[in-house]
Amino acid sequence: MANQLPPGQFETEKWPILHQGDVYQFDEDTWNFRLFGKVKEEITLSYSDVMNLPKTVSTIDMHCVTTWSKFGSSFEGIALRELVNLVELEKDVSYIKIYGYYNGDRFGYSANLPLEALLGDDALFVYRWKDSNEKEWEGISPKHGYPLRFIPPESFYLWKGSKWASGIEFMKEDEAGFWEELGYSMTANSFKEERYR
Image (cartoon, rainbow, N blue to C red):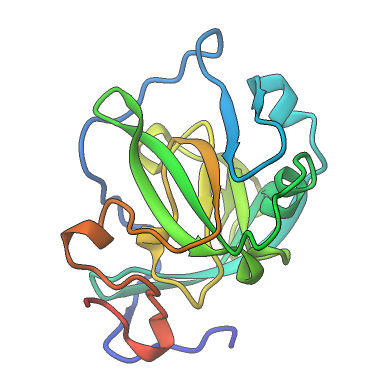
């Protein structure tokens, strides 16, 4: 599907900045990442714990529900599967919510996703990136979600990519996240133009 423009989208070379609420100001001393929900034992990771996990580099096309698409961005980060491997899931866990900071609340933002679709190289908690025409990597900016931002596979609209990520809740049943509660699609397939319920 690389460089395939979903219906209703236009291509941009820039990475537009869109978000709700305040830009989170990272403080390593207070920041942590929580793995919880339908797991045998919850885990809380420090920033250094997360950054010591195996890294993955992947090129992922991004498609925003506001109709822009950006092709060929490379990201370096921690594959979601590396975090899943740290916990023992209860039977029949099929969904997750990825949380992020929203106006000071570390669990104020969330996006729901099916777990099975996120176990490849194209579901990353990223901390740096580069465009296809750039040689040098750069850290993602605070406005793009520093220190850790989830980038979903290209089959999902980008609102599923939680900025300022703070944790993963493992669930047996699907449950609406921030934008889904406001009427956006639960499944958000960009190629099926699943924008709203």
